[in-house]
Image (cartoon, rainbow, N blue to C red; front, side):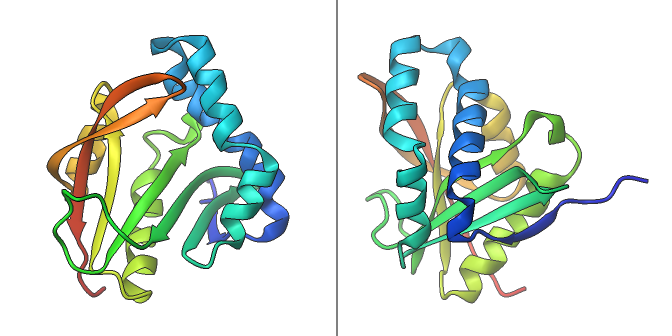
Length: 176
């Protein structure tokens, strides 16, 4: 019998582990399809311990971790505030990052983590959850569609110095 990871709010002391986990997951997901220099630049701009500590301390942000045996196996970073112009729903909350360790793919953790994020965003007053996903990541796009996210347009994402196309996805939040 395999236990399920605990999903909990991230604490300030989680910044270093979160930086390592986020950088590893991003690298695992995108390094093979992109220029190594662009990937390294993005990692340096996004996943240092200091950056993670700032994000964890941001009152507009909320981070949920999936933890198993003391190690992070997934996380979601939510951020309230202004949404991309293509998002029309009320009281938007962005899924700024969503990663699950490859070893946990297909085991039900990703949908559970997203459902927990949806409940947390709704409880905090959000009416719409939105995110962007690389248009060259069909697995992610299918996952979000399965969870009820709707494609509402395109957005530009800079991976290092390379402009890429992301799909802009939104989901109306309901009680429960």
